Picture: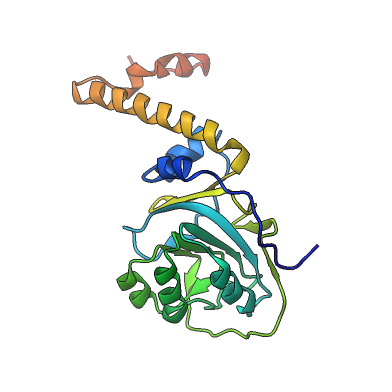
Length: 224
């Protein structure tokens, strides 16, 4: 199999558009509480959010050669999801590459390592999620893979999966489940909206969901 795969499955633009604005936590819950990447992976700025198709890249620790190639290949709306090896304290991505990503219209990038030039990236408005911020540089000398399945943040991500990320976290939705997960996420959003309307009217979440039955089943006792 080739190190670099160019043809990957891609969901329709219409389906992807419906993921725009979805909350990561809602998608995670709608998918049976699966797909959440390590919470150490956070946005450089809490206002950042994204939804896009995964372009996966795996690099050797301390080397960003394949990341540069992945950005070269990426299409508008792609999210580069990068497994950058075992060392978190490397900064393989900064302002220079960010300018290329913005110019190409990438939806954003997800790293299991550090990045640098954080203020400049924030100013560019490019959604970037990383495990740390670190100035350490990287080599450009070692092969990796592009558009192979990778593990990032403890989750297997396949090329073409839908990535949703915001201030609360990052979730990967398998492409084959994308339509059903979206339907479940929309239903959950509608249900929560109805519950919050009742809360604003003065009801209690404890009573709405009947949690007293749960306490009773646990033989919980209360002071009279």
